[in-house]
Image 1 (spheres, rainbow, N blue to C red):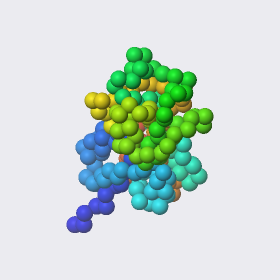
Image 2 (cartoon, one colour; image 1 turned 90 degrees about the vertical axis):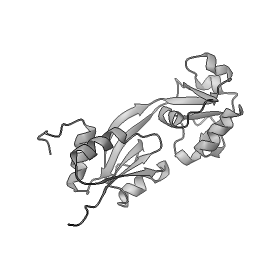
Image 3 (cartoon, rainbow, N blue to C red; image 1 turned 30 degrees about the vertical axis):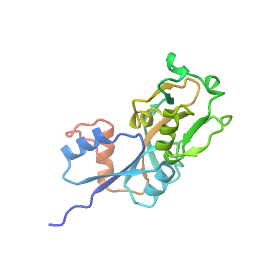
Image 4 (cartoon, rainbow, N blue to C red; image 1 turned 180 degrees about the vertical axis):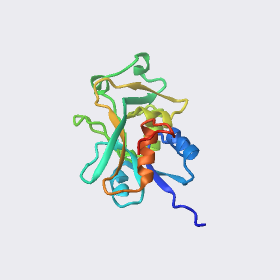
Length: 195
């Protein structure tokens, strides 16, 4: 008997497929393969069929794609643990006006704040930079948590638009496992009659 083809789920940095993957493995005999994806590639990999679905950071071009919005994330400012802003619970872009802002180019996510100017670097380089006290990093909260270190901390930025993570797949993908995974993320039970 041939081994079934794995169902491939892509996910961008910070997206957390673990709870849905556990439910999949409890309910399905089909193997599930989790595929890390850079945000700049998230649409391409699903359109090209490299993955069946992707947990993507929105927005995406929805032409030919279905999308379910899953959750929203706040943007946070990551800074060295001795930074002056650590004394407050949250910051605004005005508080960051005199800071050297760094953006993790490799994550593909950039805050929607065109008045801010920063050099591009990897997430790891950006965290190292802020740990050294020479900059502030703006990222979704899940990315900050993923790269947490003892010498950095973060504060929510109250006046930057957050980011949304959604489940994206091609409109012409008729694999029944797509509907199974949609049911899982929507919280349907294994005995649900919805197809």
